[in-house]
Image 1 (tube, rainbow, N blue to C red):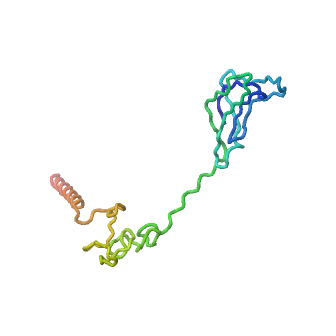
Image 2: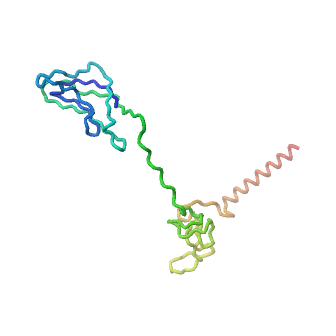
Image 3: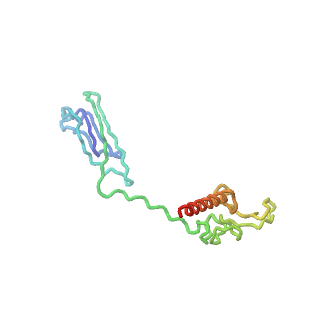
Length: 200
């Protein structure tokens, strides 16, 4: 860990300035051996660059929580910590990235011919009218076997992808959108043919 500090504190016998990493002491100011006569006060007269080794305290997941602490006896008082530009610097091999997600289970793709966990049937295609719908759900023939089906007509029991707010739909044959696109294409071809005839 690198940072800049402006630290003024009494000798470590009386007052302690410490840096902890994950609750363990990584640095402390000097405590003189003279007990009550200790007078090795730490006084920075300017901003100082300081480098502290915190690698031994990093958790197995690569996390570290830093704390700047100041303990004082209330006797002689100095300014304490002023800290700026804290930066954790790493080098060498880092922590392994997480494993990639598991591949999707086979059979969860409708139309692949494998009945998956969320499919009632899968006949290998996405066609309605063959007993297994384009949504891989069982189709019925329109008869009222249970007494709750109210569908009538030729398409009773067929699953349409857009009918339940899910899936994708394409325009059915003869729909207005399809007719409009066909008409535009026809007009474009006629326009190109006339242009070629005039150029001759």
